[in-house]
Length: 274
Image 1: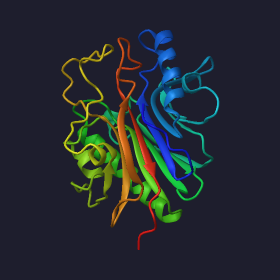
Image 2: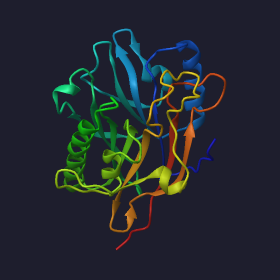
Image 3: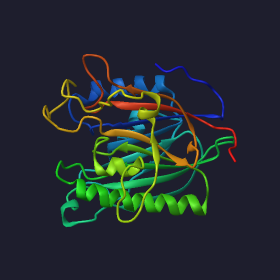
Image 4: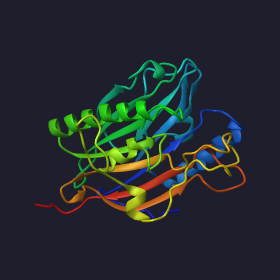
């Protein structure tokens, strides 16, 4: 378990696809509750959470102490995404990611939340990004990625602050959509640069969050294995928050919490850079 450094100069972020309430949900719920209590995160981005008249999966998993920001336009069964914050929340918006006829059977979206952290970190725009998952939809993922990136650039100009993209991006580092995020690819005449927390803290170490040996895996030959990411927006010097730790979480034990493994990332304020 990562060592926690207390204080407003640190932000601990966790991202995880919860896999709804599939499998042995009572047992998985126990693992979630104990795991999140131990992680002690400030901000959490969850995907595939269930929300309805009789269920609020994110609330059940996290317990009290978090403000929950819920996706509004969800799957017919209530599945969607949730962002949780211990810190005050400002503006919230959803980016509609239905970009072609092939995206209309999945509630793909990006939930952008303004996190109002105390100085020295200050404002953080957190994008819980959940694009199309289908293996042959990288075209759609690139269109969705550009839509989100443009909106984040607009928000950062309007209300400057740090920008973090975290979620199940359904693509690995070789994909055009991830190469765009990390400054290696241009899409629709646009380029940005975000630093992968995993690449920064663990250079050269492959990222695997959707492995075939996970007890809940139902896709033994899924070609993309490192599909959950935390990305920090860069200025001309590099990422605007120091990446002090990046580890997998919920990845141990005979029964894991989800068909995905999560990521826990510690970010820290940097001194002013001219």
